[in-house]
Every structure is written in structure tokens, then in C-alpha cells.
Image: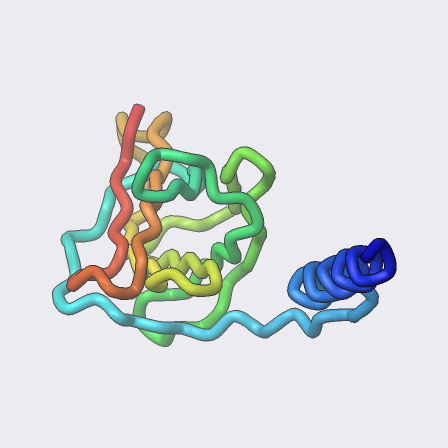
Length: 145
């Protein structure tokens, strides 16, 4: 009886390790532009580009891949991962129209148009709420003080 329990426990540990990708080096995918939105919201007007990625319940979403693309040509400007608190920041972003794309495996890709400008809104940050793929619309961001 004890041998069966030890073997079962060993298989459970191996299964959990395999699911977590232990002992494997995962290739980091190159960010690509994606637009799963049915209709674009108006661009958010921000003075800089920092923010936080959250889940529907308001929990921080660490390790989200947040990428910044130019609006006109969809050229990748920069890509960062959100930290343990879901926070991210792009340094030295020039004025203009951009797209922020946020990805987390298993969730709908967020695609948010933003306009970087000098304005009284300079102290606002982008809050991206990630949603499951089974919800009709994909994620949008909003600016908060």
C-alpha cells in the first residue's frame, strides 16, 4: 500500500513539474501586432506611458507582455513584462499615436490606442483589464489618476 502511494505522489510531482515547465527553457515569443477588438475606442490621451495590468477581479497580472507599436505602421517600439504588481513602464516615448498590446496566455489580447502628448493628464497611468477569450469584446484600457 505504501509503495502505491509513493509512486502516485511521484507521478503527481512529475506532472506538476511538467505543467510548470521545470527543466525546460521556453522560447520567448517576439511581440507581434494583434487587433482582436471589434471597434476601437477613442485614443487615450496620456502625458507618458506607464500603467498596470489587472484581471477582471482587480487582481494584479504579473508577467504580462506589454508591447508598444506605432499607430501608422504597427512597428514595434518597445516591449516590457509587467512586474509582480502588474505594473509596467515605457521610458522615453515621444509624442504621437501608438497602440499598446498586452498579452497573457489564455486571455484575450488587449489592444489600446493611446495618444502621447504634453497635457494636464501627464500624471495619469494606463489600467489594462484583461478578459477571458469567451467574453464578446476584448480588453480596453482606461486612464486613472
